[in-house]
Amino acid sequence: MTPETHDAVLYFSKTWGAVYLFVVFVLAALWIYWPSRKPIYEVARQSPLSNEDIQQ
Image 1 (cartoon, rainbow, N blue to C red):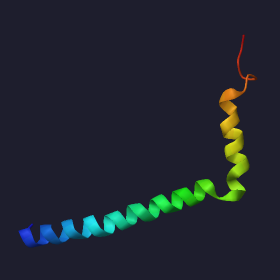
Image 2 (image 1 turned 90 degrees about the vertical axis):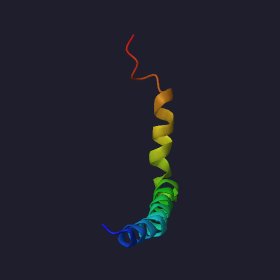
Image 3 (image 1 turned 30 degrees about the vertical axis):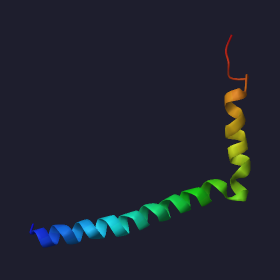
Image 4 (image 1 turned 180 degrees about the horizontal axis):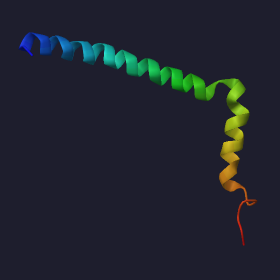
């Protein structure tokens, strides 16, 4: 690989890689905080506090 090609690939990965990761982050945040998904996360939030699974 020539130095020019390496520099071009490095530039592409730094710019568009950052954009790609930002888009993935925004989509994940929207997925988590979407209002219709709140009941699912409410159940998950309470599950560690539940005593029904503890065998004594």
